[in-house]
Amino acid sequence: MTTLTDPPQESFRLSMLLNDTRYRSYTFQFIALVCVIGLVAYLASNLVANLRAAGLNISYEFLGEPAGYDINQRLIEYDSQSSHWRASVVGILNTLLVAFLACVTATILGVFAGVLRLSHNWLIRKLMAIYVEAFRNVPVLIWIIIIFTIMTAVLPSPRAFRGDDAEASMLFDAFAFTNRGVYVPKPILDSGGWIVVITFLLSVIGVFAYRRYATKLLFDTGKLLPMGWPSLAILFVPSLLIFFILGRPIGLEYPELKGFNFAGGINVRGSLIALWFALAIYTGAFIAENVRAGIQAISKGQTEAAASLGLRPGRIMNLVILPQALRVIIPPLISQYLNITKNSSLAIAVGYMDITGTLGGITLNQTGRAIECVLLLMAFYLTISLGISALMNVYNNSIKLKER
Image (cartoon, rainbow, N blue to C red):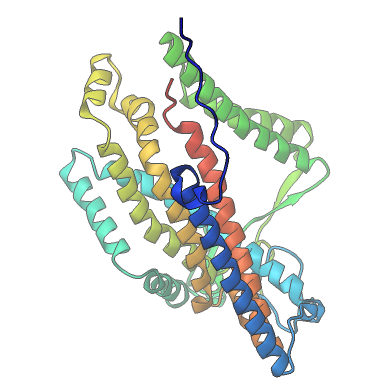
């Protein structure tokens, strides 16, 4: 009687690194990694040698020196005597602000335009096609300049709001649209105001939790819960109750015309609005095509099967088509978010002081530390891009098809 045994294990030999397919790929990858490290080390040593020959060295001590320049749009306290580091932080916050606003607006605009491009209404379908083709085939810098020109040349100056025979008037006595920007009411938080804010944020989380529960219940049992009014109730009712119980701890400071300009409120400068809208409508055209492609990637049989069950067209799109289309839409959507973040560096064209305008512009010219400033700029954009990619990839993995 014979028994089957495993063949004896072959001992490892150096020749197997090239001859054995199990190790050959690792060998070539290691050689490529060593070559890349060597090239980077050579370039770095060459840079240090050239700087030493010119009597220079890499130093970031200039970040602690006074900046000596003002920044018109800022989210934190800053003046001309603040350090270059604080000026860089202001620029970073301005970049993140316009990138966040543009990403949200472009997503909303792109989803609506992408869905409407597939509408059965001929006029709506053609209008959306004109929007997509017009905006994505013209450079974003031109749209930034066009919108900024409209903001500065068409809107009235603040003095037009003065007097009984004023040429312009405020909207709802709270919003003023001028060539110096848009003035909006500023929220003032009194004691207990943060409790209302935290309650509202928790309500937003509650809305997502309720909608997720309603969707899961529909898929598991077929029971359809209402989405609209419960979501609005969860979003606003708790915050309003806390607001009135605490005695209205949040107030508004309205802008008022004093002298030749408005005082009070928040001044959203025209440069921010121009950059925000231009990035949103430009990138929204690309997102619309991604949405359209994702929807068309879903078989028409899915729509017909859902309709045969009695679902309305809106429910079919929300519950059947879009959840499946997201698996096609999300990967290119990540690239569009990265493009928005990087295209925000065009802000200097309209005087919006982002990180490129502060650290990569005025600070670089004043200190002459070009290498240090460029390295910091590269590190910032690399970090932001990798962060956006990581977050979106986590979401992409959560919605991808799970196979058994």
